[in-house]
Length: 168
Image (tube, rainbow, N blue to C red; front, side, top):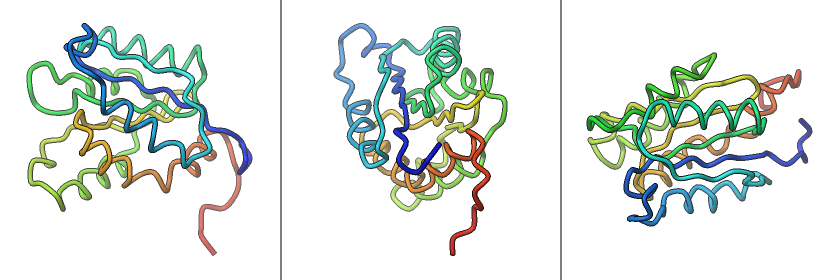
């Protein structure tokens, strides 16, 4: 992937109410707005219920069939019984990227102690980077802003770039 190549993005919102049309997906819209700085193209966007098999299937489809570079999920990362996004993500990723999850939690902790209950997972499936974000628009902004500067480089490395990682 060259510096100028467009990053293909999928946005997957986990929301029982949103999937029934009972709630507007403001978090998904915030993700779309924020990834514009990456020279990206959102190729897929869906709002689905908080169900492990459904989430797993969509993540696999976005990575394996659509071959997206980056999949950003929102919702389902907390501790309620319906928060199952991390379990579904762990079931489909091949390699976890704990540093990204740690940085998101650390940045959020500066704003609220509730950030410590985030169970967000980041990882790789094939050549797709998958990042779980919280469900609230405010938390999406905080968490995505924390990892945004590293996303292009991460996608390039996943796709096989041999460029050095060190900054000069």
